[in-house]
Image (cartoon, rainbow, N blue to C red):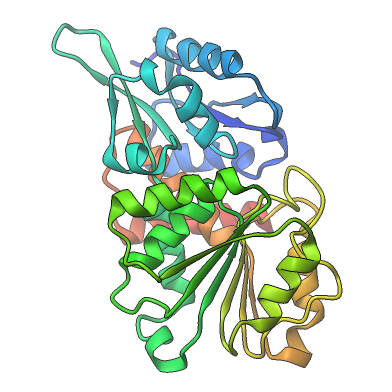
Length: 313
């Protein structure tokens, strides 16, 4: 029997506020996992590289620590500690991020540390539940991704892979460095030229203008993290969403200013407003499956979603 001390980790900023702390034990029962213990590893937004390295080493060297999901810090974990991993998947290398830390037995009997980037898969699973396969061809809509971090990068990757890709994907960031990194990710991936527009927005009013100029039906996404670990929105309250737009807030908890801005215009602009709950479900189920070497089919994921919904209510 696996020792009771076995556990899974959660690397974030305010992990104690996440629903997963209550949901994980329920999922452990559904899946028959060897542990019901999820441990939060909180690091500040401006954590130093040494802090990331120390945490990864702690997970690597503790035989009872099965692995971890990384949120918010996934690009910083890659930048600071990618050399500590024995194996990185192609998404992790291409996107320069690590969202799943797991272990596998090596040929010498010691554990190998594996880093994977699950976001391109999980964001695509959530995207397909929101946007029909023929949506962009039918509507001529575009996509505006506010934020060029790990989640924004993953969404731009998933959109570029769609058979029904939008005519234009605009990605905004507050710094040119973030956009330069995203350009390089797309260059290495072979993303068609002209599909992505990279825009530095020094102030929320500039982001407002980009959103307002998008065609009717466009998908507007808050991938900045604002409204979750830090209060705020990438937009001002004066923003005007395109008619019949899909406003997708990647967060499901926090102050959620972007979500409330969209809800205020939901009726007058005919918006479809979506929060990050299903993205949260897909993100966590994929990493749990990775850490515990499970193959989750659709019905099992829905059983897990149903268990999580009881906590959300």
